[in-house]
Length: 108
Image (tube, rainbow, N blue to C red; front, side, top):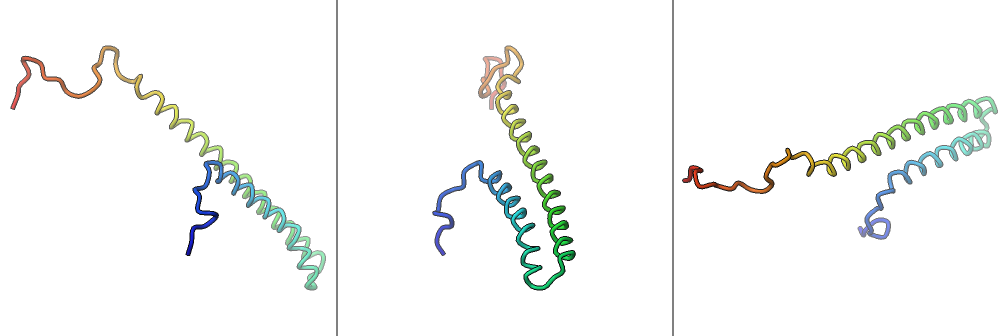
């Protein structure tokens, strides 16, 4: 097959967009499923129960997705801080770079 979605790489914000899309589709299904159930002859009470169950699952998933996004953002921020702090971790006066043999250093 050919490349998916136009063959371009997904932007960095794609996970957040897909998470909010999942929540939107879940909310849509909370409305659609009971309508379809009533259309196929399910009682209003049964359809309402299905709607409440779907709404509860959707709410829990939304909370978990938000926690996951916050954790990922914290991890990215910590990695950035660690990467920015690396050069300053050397002791004052410490030499950077490779090994330099002095006149008294043993050689092979």
